Amino acid sequence: MAVVTIVGAGVIGVSWARLFGAAGWEVRVSDPRPDLADLVARELADLPVTATADLAAAATGADFVQEAGPERIEIKEQMFATLAVHTRDDVVLASSSSSLLPSAIARGNPAAGRIVVGHPFNPPELMPLVEVVPGPRTSEATVDRASEVYRRLGKLPVRLKKEIPGFVGNRLQKVFNDQAVHLVQQGVIDVRDLDDLVRASLGLRWATVGPFESGVLGGGPGGMRHLAAHVGSQLTFETGSADPARQGEVLDAVEEAYGTGEAAYERLAALRDGRTRAVLEPLGWTAPGAEAAPGTGSAPGAGH
Image (tube, rainbow, N blue to C red; front, side, top):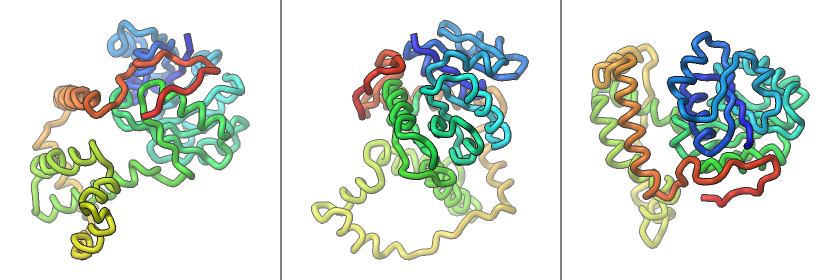
């Protein structure tokens, strides 16, 4: 049985652990939090998972590492220094970082060639995408191996050609969210209506075709070139941007619309996860655990 070490037992780490465990991997979760054993027993019951605060022990003998610790470069540098010493030379050291560059994480690390960002969208156990982001010193073998592992987990690994802050998914999300906040601040729409608008239009459309493919279809037989020359030529308005000084107003409105705290989180997460599971199979995504856990030398699985 292949062994994965998950570093960090927050929301992302626990979700990664569920995904790997469901796919037949032996999972080791490492985190210094004092309630680690209780958390694993509660959140990862019936899966082949062990827990330890000792990162070196968790990493020794692992076949793959997925780090999901705090988004602070000094902490990641320390963790990856330990991982470099206590893993074999063929083991991928992947970070779930959502913004930190792999070159920064690997700075001064003798295992820089094995360090790569494998950035999921939350929750990793359900969302198909993993952005595979190599640093300048990341080896081709590392990128290939990471992509293979994610593919066999039922994910869609998308490799970036080079590193860039925020990668691609979060850069797009940042622009979109900034405009959403701006529109609420301007009194154009309220929080719930904006969410409903996106779910009933762009969200549904982009779940089936991406923005460029949508542009091809939007232009009819003339394709995206026709769309750009006609409808696109009229989209000349300024979009504006959110006012950081008024961020609190929007946060208040979001909390009023959806609530806050543990009960609200659990209710919303269950609703999100149920809806996500309902659309994954019809959209053609592989269910988690559909393929066996790969050994060190396994061949790649089928792509999406």
